[in-house]
Length: 130
Image (cartoon, rainbow, N blue to C red; front, top):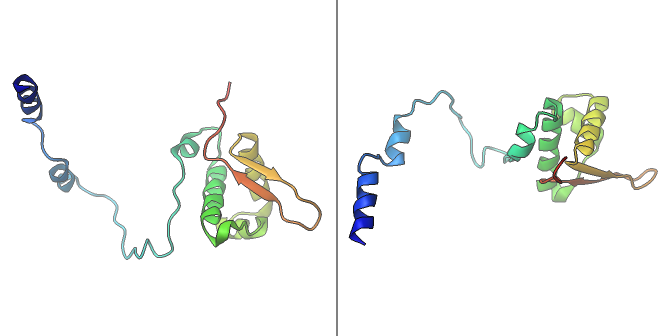
């Protein structure tokens, strides 16, 4: 037991507490006036999506917006025109991004019939690709 304690003491002897190190790091970005919960909340996007080189920038933003809608408004998807307006994109671009996400397995779209909204299933994981 003494050997383990001596080993741990020698291992940590030259280490600083992380809090002290973080105070030394120079920041180059600052968030001003955020809260409560950055005014209107936030959306976490899985790194799997952010790092996937097969997903376009527009596809990544579309995925993030779908997550935003899924976590708010009781899971309501407001429609492609509203999504386009919120993203600052055209409705045609939104349809392209939705098809892209569907082709990559991040989204499943079920058409429910004429005059009815589509049903969207947003995947936070995907099947392994060959």
